[in-house]
Image (cartoon, rainbow, N blue to C red; front, top):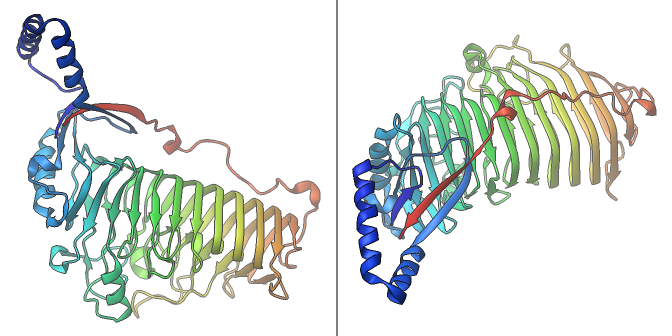
Length: 486
């Protein structure tokens, strides 16, 4: 397959030669034969259009680099060579790599700047199950060591660091992590290093991940870390609900990020906001901030639709979530922290949640006990304040809320308003459990605990939700058009 971007550059003399030859050819063919030839020529092209933060001047197919989409041939070297060759166009309008229909078995490969990876609707990237295809890299500095083991971690399937202007998109093409082998090793405690993620981009800026389907990740699916100006949009993520740690989207020490229009079925939190672990996250000191989560649909029977933490030691601030739908999910929004975490979670705004079949609607945990190692500081107490929830409807709920702060370090500034919770037939006797918290409520049913006094029905809009845009909302996508010649 040859790909001709509509913006490709050609020498003026080359264009002139093409035009002259074309006129001569048409004149020679003439009549019906000429018309037939032109129709056949047009049918050999396929016009591709999609929305992106950047369009590209140069394009190629993975088949141009020897890729074979039969589901058996290993294409790691083909992808590595493709990215390496296309990187030369970074300063000349950028490049894109098209993955056509087929099953493309591959190990990990790195991305490059000013680059787009595009997956055809019938393209499947199959992650290699040969562990030798997965290099081992250092732990993240804000974590100290891997999440599964104390050592390093296997590199992610799609990986990039110190990049700018990177796009992973398509026509809902699929990335299949083939995670079963990794889940078995995790459960049997046979892992030497932490499992790989499907996509990890570090120390980078201007990132778009959109309109693809991710299935069966070995662990986390999408992990932007130490990065900024990120859009994750129109993603479908599917994993068995009992698969270990298959978090959907995990922004980690990131600034200015937009997560929208995503559908996630997961064995862990659908979105987990993070910023480092215990003393390592405290020392690294890079918070996640200015985060938008909107129009999320989540199914996760054993975890949260949105989790803040538990690795939040670098801080989390200014998170705005709206139009959240959760079905058969353990909790709507959960804050996870504990003594030794340090850091903060503050200025959190949630508006418009529709929940069905939940264990808890609201859950705050101040006794989350998993630590990076034995060197955590017992005097490092987290600051949790300014947590706002409004306009929530929930049905078939076992318990309205479980809000547990830390003795001597209460969670403060909690505001809950305009909330209607219909309890399940076998709901807990007491719908609210509250300890070491401070806050207010208005228009909440069933009535909340005494630590959240009711301010009266006229104040159902009292809980804040900012009206001004964040910078990430001002980033507009453009229509990119290309012609594919088969």
